[in-house]
Length: 464
Ligand code: 5AD
Ligand code: SF4
Image 1: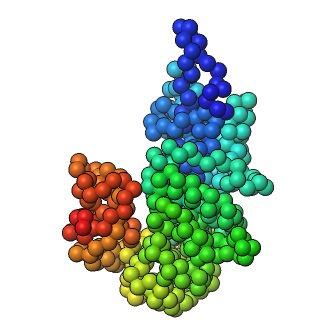
Image 2 (image 1 turned 90 degrees about the vertical axis):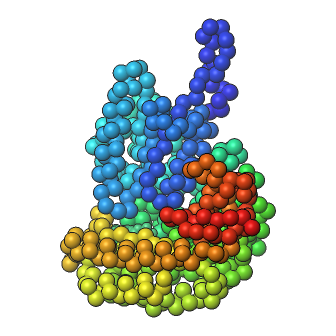
Image 3 (image 1 turned 45 degrees about the horizontal axis):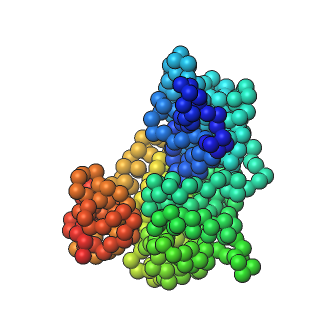
C-alpha cells in the first residue's frame, strides 16, 4: 500500500497522514540473513512500514533466525519470551504488536513455533519473504499464519527493489544474493534442509540489481550464496556462465570499484573463477574457502568430496593467479569419530596454509542431518580443548597477517565515521577496518593509504 493512499487523519480539522507503522527486525546468523532482512524491510516499506531500531516503538517485530549451530532455536524461544512481555505491556496500553519469526529456525521448526510460543503471530520461511505483506493481511484477518512451503514463484522477482535513499542509508558496501540453497549435503550441515536445493538467480536480475546499487552510490558489492561459486546462469550470449564470467560482467558496471563473493566450496573453484582473480583488479584479493578439517578420513565422513591435498593444490593455483590473495576458512572440531591424529592433520593444514582470518566451531549435532546419527561423538571437553588449541594458532596467524600490513600501501574504501571524533573508518582489500583522519576523504571515496600501526582488529593509516 502506498503511503498516500492511507486514510487521512482529520482530527482537529487538519489533514495529516498518520504515522506509518513501524517494523523492528533483529537479524541472527550469516550475511545472507542480513541481505534478507533488508529485502523484507523493503517489502514492508512498500506496504507502509517504516523501519525502526527501537523495539518498543514497533508495531511488528521480526526475528530473522539462524539454525546453523548449537541451541539456536532455544535462543529464539527465550528471546520470544522477552518480546512477549513487551507485547503484553503494549496491549495493556491499547497498542498492537505483531511478532513474526523468519529465517532458518522458522523453516526448520514451522508450526512448532506457534505451539511453543503463544505470542507469535506469523512464521515465514526464507523462500516466501515476498509474501510477507499478504501474510500480514491474513494475520489481521484473524489467526496465526505459518508460511514455510517452498514457493513456486521466484521470490526475488516479487521482492521490491529498495529505494535509492534506503540503499544510500545502508552504506557504500552492499550485499547481493546471487545463489541460495545447497545440494552438497555435508553431513554436519542443516543448510540443504532449511534453505532448500541450489537455486541461481538469472544474470539479468543480478546485473540490474548491481546497477541499481551502483546508481545509489554503492562502491563495493559482495555476492552472496551458501555455495556462491556453484552459481551458474545463462548469459546474454546464450552461453552458460559460471561465477567467474559473472564477475567479469559486474566489473564493467560504472561505479562498482570492488567485488567480493562468499561462501565458496573447494569443489566449485573452476579455472574461470581463478582467472578472474588474476585479471580483475576489482575483485578483491581475499577468498573465504572453508575446508572444515585437514583429515581425509573426517573429510570423507563429512561428505566434503575432496581430500586435504586437493584443497592445498587448489590454493597453489589461486595463489599463482593472485599472489597477494589472503585466505580465510571455516573449521569444525570434534566431528563424530575425530581422533587426536585427525585433529593434528587439521593443525598441520592450518600451519601450511597460513590464514588471514578464520572461523572455527565445535561440532554441534543438527537434528535431521546424517552427522547427528553417527557413532563416536566426541566428548564436549575434548571439543573444547581442540577448539582452544586451533583458535590459538588461528589468532596467531591473524595477528601475523595484521602485523605484516604495517608500512604497506593499499587502497581503502571509506565507509563510515569512526567511533572517535575526527576519524573515519574504511576497509582494506583484505576486509580489515582501516582508521584514518576524517579529512582523508568522503564516505564512498577509495583512497591510497600507508599503514602506520595495527590496532585491535584494525589498522591505522595515513593517506598518501
Ligand atoms: N556444527 C558446527 N559447525 C557447523 N557449521 C555448519 N554446520 C555446523 C555444525 N553442525 C559451520 C561450518 C560452516 C559454517 C558456516 O558453520 O564450518 O562452514
Ligand atoms: Fe552446508 Fe556449505 Fe556443505 Fe552446503 S556446502 S551442506 S551449505 S557446509
